[in-house]
Image (cartoon, rainbow, N blue to C red; front, top):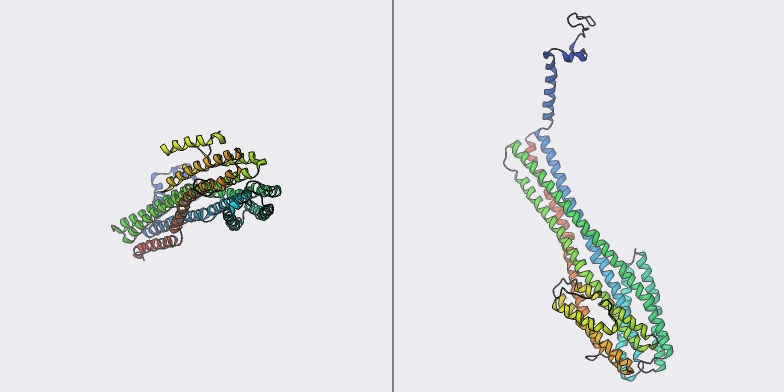
Length: 511
């Protein structure tokens, strides 16, 4: 039929060929659908043939390599973050906070010794004590200088810390000059014990006011800044480790699934039961996964021990020690300066409450209430009816020997408080020299002897916690530093190489 001619049978124009048929061609006889069916079947065969065995094996191999690399990257990233966190806490922020607290302690005891020098005066009965007091003053002065130098080095990059350190540096020389002038005036006056000359007393007032209003707040600011850094890094790092644990688990399981799929494909397509090299890769990947999870958990535990269990106690005890020595200085100030006696007595009570807080207690009933609290605590160690630095420590007992050492702090603190009341009673009775002798004496049963036992007890608890902190940091360093990283890199290289070697012989069969 000619193109365009009228088909008398169908009433339509001829197209000349099936390829030129219009939409109506679909409505033709059943035989006209055969070419379409053949074309569809051909496309399906071509689609299936595009995923040939070599292509499928290569794709699964690539997926395995990517997943194994992902597992290695997740483990490396999480443990590198843990290493940085441990380093920030264990090697920088925490030691800096402790050094700043040590600076506070050294400054406090410097002033305590200066007050004692003013208190004992030129009385020949105290010559040996005077020499000893001067030696301690010089020792604390040296310690303060060393602590200040380390604090200055640690404050680099911290504007607030640098300002605080500069205040201490600038004012410490002025304070030392005032103390030296106080001693000179006292030597010239040859004043008896407990009755310094007016000029020496006024100069000492300037020194102690400078220390209490400028030096100690600045030193405490350095401590607080580093403590804040420790808390922030600790919180962030624990959150990162918790999330990282799940990332490692997900990456490891994905790698194992990919390896399992590759192993199954090789078994089905090549009719082999197992590929030994891929089996080894699967086993080693499982080991790597478990190791990564274990190291992440260990890093978290080391972090908790170093910061929460040890550092928190170290900081509380360091502050407690500094407070105790400043409290001891308040006793000497109380005896030395009658015009400010009431203010120094209140300051002593405030520091007593900071050390072991008993809400609402006054100086005249503090001993009784502390004794009752100590008895309750001895009966049940979980019962800690007081707060303050000592309460914080007793609520954070973690390490062997810490409980007994902390109990000794409580007992020596109770005895020191009893000594304080006896000293004040002697002063009220007008027995000033006896009060001075009892307050500064180092013989058994005298106040400073009992205070020395309190200092030794605090040092013992500090040592327990500092050793635990150092041990936790050292263990974390050993697990996360160079050898562990090198071993992980080597294992990753082995896994990648074995995966490729395990597949390569099968792919050669298609060449």
